[in-house]
Image (cartoon, rainbow, N blue to C red; front, side):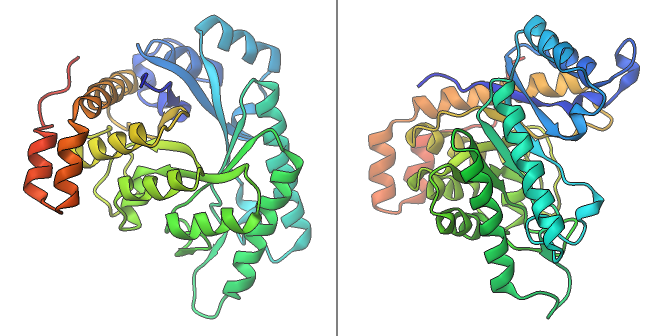
Length: 321
């Protein structure tokens, strides 16, 4: 199976401006991402990354750098602090839906077919604060309405268990798949963010398999972390074996969408960090393809942990640079 197209988080490219000549507006960040060997796409945040950007200049920059848009990621502002699709104000719910549809139209205009909705405010903070059934139903209604308006676009829910809300209407893979299933629409699915999955106490590989089984794994945000917060660390830097298992299951399940590096360099050179992400994926993707599937299947059938680990082999060698 060929390697997936790899995409960068543009906001990562804002880090360490001292290592880059000139300003770092969105177009500059695209040019900076293009210096990373192995990246084929960038994802844009809507509406933030389009504010003040000429659409023709954006298209020209993408063409000049040989990068395409992988997906448009929704970022709701503080007007929706009480909820986007679940806001108690019907007018704000409708505005959130319109904003998401606009993002989908932009995706189509830029040659992408994927809108990722991170419902940053669709949750609650206190006991008795919300009607849980109504919260779920409003989320389903929002995604259904968007899906019907964008029949040619994949619309996916990027779940997260907490931050900034204490609890979310869809906080893990199971509840997110329930939302997608309850829409009754084939173009509604889930984006799996590894750090979010770890915070939720999940095994990302198991979460991915469940979504693949329902043909609803529309996106993957690859990163790593300690599982306490949204760390956004280099791919495989904390959980190399679990990352290998995730990529193995993606290969086995026929995942054919791009992989997006949702990582957050602070003190690090973001180009160096992205290069390390690319190297880790390439190494682990290749290793996943080298695993003897029959031997591993036999070990799994017997629930033999050590035989399974022997079939996989060590994964801790240094990433090739």
